[in-house]
Length: 349
Image 1 (cartoon, rainbow, N blue to C red):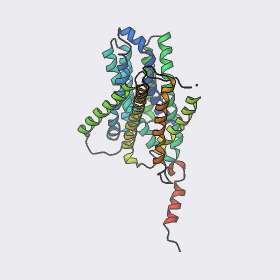
Image 2: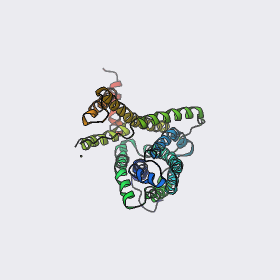
Image 3: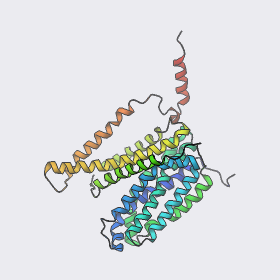
Image 4: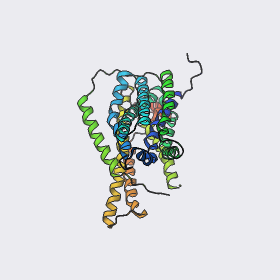
């Protein structure tokens, strides 16, 4: 028995801390690149490899997460992922050259690739579907806050401290996460007899890595200064969308297939992010070419925004085809939906 009452959402909170660390680390290095480059005697542009290789490592090892969780148990894989991520952070804090930093970031990406989908899998399998919305809220907050505070935190650290503190701050968080995961995260697993499809994993990893590498570099260095109101409104609705879609996506998935579903969803999310950045950058370049200019202006972003918006609106065609009882277990209306289905199945007098 635990020595203190176990909160209902303790497991989602533990997973949320890991997701926060992973999401923050993906962006915290961005504002520190010039300082790190100066210390290594390298060009800041070359330090982009530290970001790109981290994202590539995430993409390569994401497809393994569901299979490993079913084979060895979610707690073992999730805890091991935190260990690998923490070791990668230690390595990043001690490097003395760009190749060493790239290697350490790849190790971090390996850990991060296991943390995100396996952590989500733990929540999905340990929380009743009727309570998934509240549980997913704990995962949504760090997923959105981490990338936001990463760049300013990195700038603050390199201004007043050594850039190595960017990675040192992960160490106590990682150690705390390991201790909590070992104590409270259940070692959920599903029987899976089939061996790992090595050839399939290799092809998917190479294809995913190549796609992410291309999209990541197409849009590198292009950032827009949009209006403190558009971002606020967009962020508000994005948070609602993030929570609802991540919950609804698993509403009707059977437990034995949950690990595969989380793996597929994570790969899709990572691809969609890279695709959105790459497509936006391609549209910007096209707009400049059509208008015969070399420098970007505020008006040049409009075609890209309109196109991305139109693609997003196309998702309504898929949502409109959902059954009326989709997500009934999450909303608590499963019993009502079952009763209604039974009543409709009864022959009329």
